[in-house]
Amino acid sequence: MRKIDISIKICYYVLLLSVLTLTGCTRDSDTLTDNQPVEVQAPEEIIPTKETSIEGIEQTGTATDEIQEEVITEVDWSNYFGEINGAAVVYDPAENCYQLYNQELALTRRSPCSTFKIISSLIALENGIIEPDNSTRIWSREIFWNENWNRNIDFSDAFRTSCVWYFRQVIDEIGKDMMQDELNKLQYGNCDISDWNGELNTNNSNPALTGFWIESSLLISPKEQVEVMERIFGDNTNYLEATRSQLEEVMLLSELGESNILIYGKTGMGMSYGVVVDAWFTGFADTPEKRVYFCVYLGETDDKDVSSTKAREIAANIVFAYLS
Image (cartoon, rainbow, N blue to C red; front, side, top):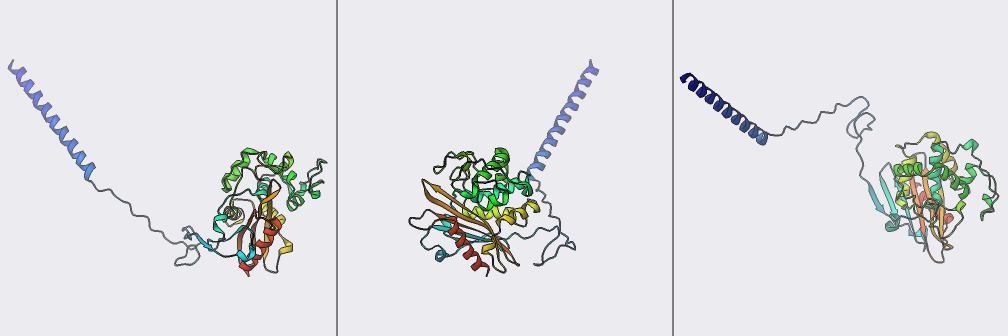
């Protein structure tokens, strides 16, 4: 009986010791978690390579280039516009600098109209839907209001004459899914192609001459037009050189060229109930030293020449003055 009592006592002391030990470990652990300082790892030192230079010398190695802050300057280009309601944007990527005339309108989204042919051409060329050497499409024999469209026509002529039926076919072959993906990548305005067939267009009900890009669901601002041009034709472009070269060929305005300034662009014009409400010219200009991107937009103005031809004229004058 006594041996049993001793055994019970031994078990009791062993159990008590275990409980105290466990309790002590828990407290130590809580104190360590609550009070220990968080260790911050120091950043690794960047060791310059041969391609990397310091203190303002051009960096071509693995070190990250300094990102210039975007600069927006409002300018008075009213003398180019006269009494026409309009806006202009010139972007110099080397300085990350925008010059804007009529900033409120320059940031307002409107229908891109035929300037969108730059985008539909880009996507179609990049994906083999248009092959410039084999690009002729057969005229349906329907008589259109623009006599230049009443014939079999190839890509180059279709772009320069802004042939809507040609690009309506091209866009249908691109298809909704690819078009939406590409506009999202380009961050093209509101990226809204919901009115695919252009049923919102009040100026034309001919299915061959309507679409989401003509006074319909797709909208973009003049500043966004310039940014899209830079994404396509800038140093960080994701598009093939062959695609860009083919586009540049049809966008070049030789009749506006000077000895050291080349202008590339596309006009666009939209009407509502027979009145011109949107007129555009957007693209880029090259000199031997630099490339700048531009957009001129004209809005509805009573008794004034609101047309894509006028927008192109104003853009050329602004660009020449800017680069001269």
